[in-house]
Length: 554
Image (cartoon, rainbow, N blue to C red; front, side, top):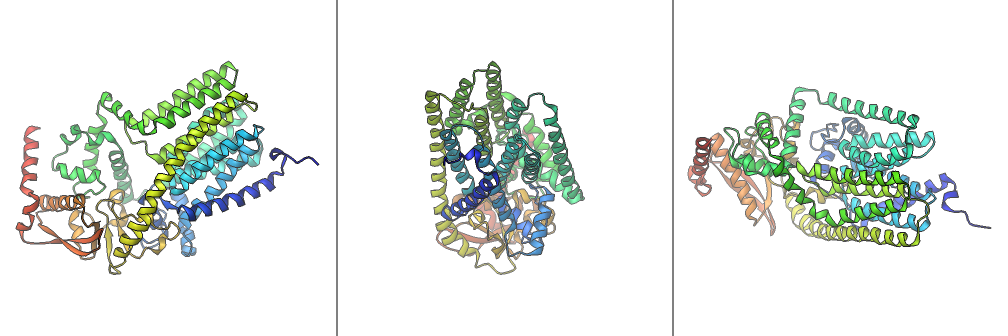
């Protein structure tokens, strides 16, 4: 009896098999790599959701829609035995990859083509799992949803809308990017069939409604202030133009260079760098001439080989389709994707997690546009290009994994974690700089953090910090500790900048008191003193004179 092709398999049996295989693959990769959050951002949102930061489970996750946060808060209220924040992402990963796999396997493309694309997707998934993150999770979920929307049947329509909606809750901008990159494929497939677009209008209305509901969740005055502040702070921290001498030379009155430097290093003084100050600085950054912004495009050079390979793959897809309208589509798509990259780079950094959300949907768009039958020569060329992409990301994954393995096992487990565990139960560990790598914790065990973490950076002015740290002076509280490298010049420089600003703005001299140290790191405290001689080593008068000179020059 002839064996049935994958296309003819029972769809429910295939889905069940893929779910099991993908769940096993995720678990294996999470154990082997091992899995960790890419940055502290997800750790801090997890701490809010599980209640370790705010005192009780809370839905104000800042970057993730409060509707999603409310579900997490309810789950944590029900039981804290499970790290629901991480588990929910893991489940969504498995579901999304199952959908993507199913979409590829149920097409009538050559089996070799399917194998090439599946290999690439699993290599990319390993890269995403290694640096687990809410942005890439939203991108993966949205891609799965869009692929379902392109299939026939009301079940696919409902499931696709549901996945896109959830993706928009997790990270709206990431979901929007993926949807934009897949939109030309959907328009090409649907053409002028208006019935296909009606559900998209409904879906868009749901997404807009969720955004409105999120804004209502933050309508309290203190949260409104924080949201405005954090939006401006993010634009400055993520904007290369904010580091221009033009901006430094036009700082608002009362703000010195050291204040602004600390803001760009994610350690602003809330009292000095307030909303009005950030608004003034932001206006100055926006006035940067286009001729200077264009220079930021050079930062895309780190992705040059990947971009070139994608463009060559795009040309190959175009050559595989004889239709004249396909030439216009691919030419427009090339300009569209390159334009997006350039546009983002003018006023921001194209971070690796954003680029991952760019590469995967673009490659899947190519798959959707490939003809079912491809000539032998073009198939060989396509295999070569896809192999290049696979090799580039295998090398990147290996480099990140090797660095992570050292940082997690040597730096985190051997030096950072034992040092932090010596803190008193009522202590608060403040972040001055980004040296304490909480992201190297097991993301399924964040709830086991035994020390109250206190953050500035994007937590500056968050209502959870109210009456805890409203200026740098509060860093000298008895229960406030600061984690720094033991022998690292930048740490001393940053701490001295903080001391300098406390002396300059508040007239309070201070000194650094060592709490405990090991071979690599130290925990210190800032202590108030009445002895101005303790400040002689950091030349506070020079700061005052520099500020006076700057104002005279203006």
